[in-house]
Every structure is written in structure tokens, then in C-alpha cells.
Image 1: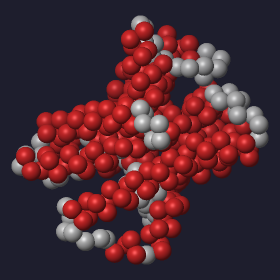
Image 2 (image 1 turned 90 degrees about the horizontal axis):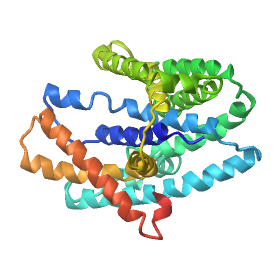
Image 3 (image 1 turned 90 degrees about the vertical axis):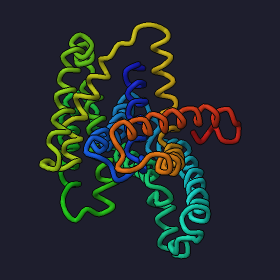
Image 4 (image 1 turned 120 degrees about the vertical axis):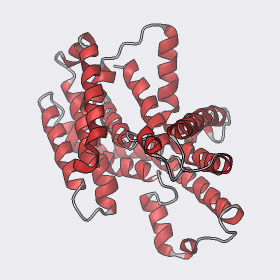
Amino acid sequence: MRLVGIDFLRGVAAFGIVGCHLILGPRTAGGELVTALCDFNVGLFAAVAGFLMCGRGDDKGWLAYVGKRARRLLPTYFFWSAVFILATVSFDLLLDGGRLNPKYGTMAFWGRVVFAGDASTHLWFLVCLFYMQVLLWSAFKVCKQRWHGIMWIVFGGVSAWVATLSPMCFFNRYPLRLAAFLMTGYGVGCLLPGGLLEACKKHNGVMWCVTVVVLAAHVVAGQAVPGFMKDWLAVGPVLLAFVGLEMKGECAEKVAAMLGATSLGVYLVHPLVTRGLSVVVSRVVASPFTAGVVLADWLLAWGVSVVTVFVLRKIPVVKGFV
């Protein structure tokens, strides 16, 4: 079943993630507050991926699933790794002192580029999504009954909590964190049959009230609650609010479909846009950057990213990677 609200949510999450990578600093307190919820969207993106896994009938076996995900994710991952390596080298030579970073001469760096997404700040998500979907697929297929949904959500919460423990290493910050939200999203998907979907639609206003309260608490809690746990506590209500969202009218459905279809592309291209805009904004506006400047930069970066994705999708040799 295709849910318009989930398409819309994918676009919203991509918009939020753009705000994670605005290269503007220092900022005023208001400038910091504008993007306070942006990192939450990374977990939300992963939860949507888990939710969508629940509705897909991949019943041809584990190897077939691995091949399918490899064909979908890995070419895109390596293509954009190459793009960001070339872009970073160009920035180093033209804007950041005119010399290459010594890391390019180390095998350790190139190993991390291939296996851990070190070509850019955001590419870890693609390769870790591949790892975690491949690892969890068999368990998801065995435990896919409605009551298993609670189990997966609890497993997600425990994993999110473990990911907050010291030391904060690569495994905790990235693969384990992603797995936590992948399991949580899958758990929510398991719970939908049997009346939950209808309840979300019937009481969508209540779900949105709960979502607003939860997100406000997320911001107010600050450092008192570990970030991954705050994200996990908020992701369920947000997901359910969008699941029950009914967008009437052909125009609304087209907007939602557009946001969903471009969400991955926006995720992939936006750091190039935010890096370029940071150079322009920092030369035009004096720091510390206020809330208005940060918000304007965020909206402009997202808009340019969406347009860029539309253009890239018109180029035959590139459109398969966005």
C-alpha cells in the first residue's frame, strides 16, 4: 500500500537533513535554535527505510535481496564518493590554501572511503543502510507478525541507548544508530494492520498534537537526554502522524510524490550546495549568524538542491544515481 504521507515525510526528512550541514558559524542563540531538530531527521530517514521494508514482498531469498540492494545502493554510493572526493580536492586547491590534505596519501583513508563513507560527511548513511538491511533482512522476514512490532521497537530503543554509551566510536554513531531506527520503523510497519492505520487517519489531529509536544520536548531537553534516545522517543509519533496524513487533491498528491522521489537525490547533493553557499554567505553577511540568516541559507540550499536533482534526472548517464 502506498501512503501519501510517507512520501511527504521522506521529503520533509531530506529538508531537515540539509539543515544538518549548513556551514555557517559562529551563530547567535537563535541561529542555533533554528536547526535544533535537524539531526533528528537522520534517524527519521532510517526509520522510514525500515517502515518501507515491512511493506515490500521480497520473498525470493536473502541472496536475491542482497543483490537487489547492492544494485540500488552501491553504484550510487561509489558514484557520489567519487564526486565528493573530486569536489573536496577542488575546494582544497582553490579555496582552502591551495594544497591537498595529507590524508589522500594514506591507505587507511581510502579504506574508509570504500567501506565507511569517508568521502563526505553524509555518505556513511548509504553504505551503513546497505550493511544493516542485509544483516537484518532474514530476522525481519521471520519476525513480521503484528505482535513482533513491539519487539522490534523495543530492540530499536535498546540499540539507540547502547549507541549513546562511551566511547562514541564509528560503530555506535553510525551502523548501530541506523540499525536502531531501521528496527523501530520496521516495528511500526508491523503494527499497522489490524486497525492502527485507520486509527492514525481517524485521530490524525491528536497524533499531530502529540508530535508537536514530543518535538518541543526534544528541543527543551537539550543535553539532559542523549541525542539518539531523544530521536528514538520522537520518531514513532512523527512516523504515525505522517502515516495517517491524508492529502486530498491531485496537486497535493503530486507534491508529495515529488518530495518522495527527490528525497534521496537531495540527501546526496546538498553538501555540495551548502559548501558553496557558505562561501557566498560568509562574505556577504557578518557573523555571528542570526536565525533569519540561517533559515534563509537553509531554504535556499534546499531549493537549489531540489532544482539540481531535477536537472540531474534529465541527464541519462547520471539520472540512475539520484
